[in-house]
Amino acid sequence: MRIKTIFIPALVFILFFKPCFSGEEETLSLSLEECIIRTLKDNLNVAVEVINPELADASLIKAKEFFMPRLDIGFGNERTESPSYWWLEQADTVTNKDLDYSATLVQQIPTGGNFSLTLYNNRYETTAGFQVINPRYGSSLRFSLTQPLLKNFGTKVSRREILIARNNLDISYSQFEKVLIDTVYRVQEAYWNLVYAIEDYKVKQQSLELAQDLLAKNRKEVEVGKLAQIEILNAEAVVASREADILAAEALIRRSEDLLRDLLNLTEEGEMSQKKIIPLDKPSFIQEEISLGEALRKALEKSPDLEMRKKTIETNELNLNIARNQLLPNLDLEFSYWSPGLSGTENVFNPLDPFGPPIDTITHPPSDALKDAFGFKYDNWTVGLTLSLPLSNFTTKADVVKARMEMEKSQLELKNLEKQVYLDVKDALRDIETNFKRVEAYRVARELAEKRLEAEVKKLNVGLTTNYFVLQYQDELAKERSLELKSLVDYNLALARLEKALGTSLEKRKITISQFIGE
Image (cartoon, one colour):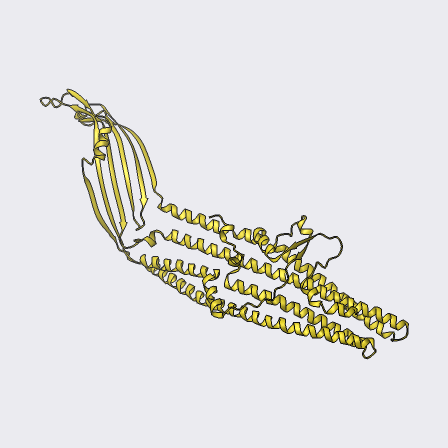
């Protein structure tokens, strides 16, 4: 019998479907995993979000530059003229020439201080008389250290910007991971909703075909006088109603397809955007058992939201410690050590006539000054402490209060987020269990509806019932089919929500952040 051949394998038609579009329209057949991979590759939201870790990494590199050594190079050239006001200068106009140049290497140290190493050289020449060395070359090698001992002391204070930038980088990675997980779930949701829309369309199409068959049967029986004319009108009304259902189902398919196409970034004009998307996968119905304790452990371990909140707490804790450090007085240790050197043209005067002209000159090369400086021929050093006591620190105390409040706020937010994660995991597990039972219940209901309709059709063929009851049972069967399919899709979406709540969507598919962001 035709009715029997349609309804007994009904579930097979529902689950193992083929494209429901007729004609030669081009199609794009995709599995769920193919949709996920293509979306993660081409989705605009993912493309935008991938920039944030790169920006955070650039900020970290900039923060590290604070500890990069710095080379300062100085050069000066001075020439002065002045009238002579002392007869020993032996000149009407005294001309002085001073050429100096230096190189200083400056390095910040992790404890909050800095040290510098300076090499200074100069050449000095004058026209004034009675100069023992003229021109003369001077060199000096100086080592200086400045170290805060109270305020601004410590590695956390000096490396604050680096630590914050590193935390921000970790937060950006977690945020990007969250976007990927959310995107995976949105693809799953759009995919299974499209599957439901297509299969619901097929259910309604089968229901329409049954109504059309019954209408054709009624017309023949009216022609031979077995039924009244009103039966044709009743069947035509049902056919019209089911045709309207078909139109609604087609609109749902187009909308579901557009949502998936938008995630796949196929909305731009082009060949791909004109193709119909045909899902290749069918909803699975495999019971997955996971305890609440195990699920919660995974969620607390892998949740990107929790990781971001923990990094925020680390930053706030750092800010609080630094704010407390700023309450301390300034006590700075300063230490310098330098070694000078001198050379040039030495004038030798006659001891018997010291005011006469030089009797000889001895030239020493400029390198002798450098040798003296690097040979530490002359030792010079200085050490000191500077204590600075603020007369008022209202602003600094306010910063401590603000940092403490930010710290307490972030800790409360973490606890609240942990509670939300617990609820999300619990809801997902509950939905999985509920929808699993719904699928089994609706499957039984659909099988019973099939048998009841088949029995009613047999009764109609022998005149023991009316078309009204057959049409009613057809509607009930279509409803049970749709409900069974919806519960099966809801079961798969509940599994997807559990993946999202556990933060395992990427791990399950062996997707890593490094695939999107270069290390």
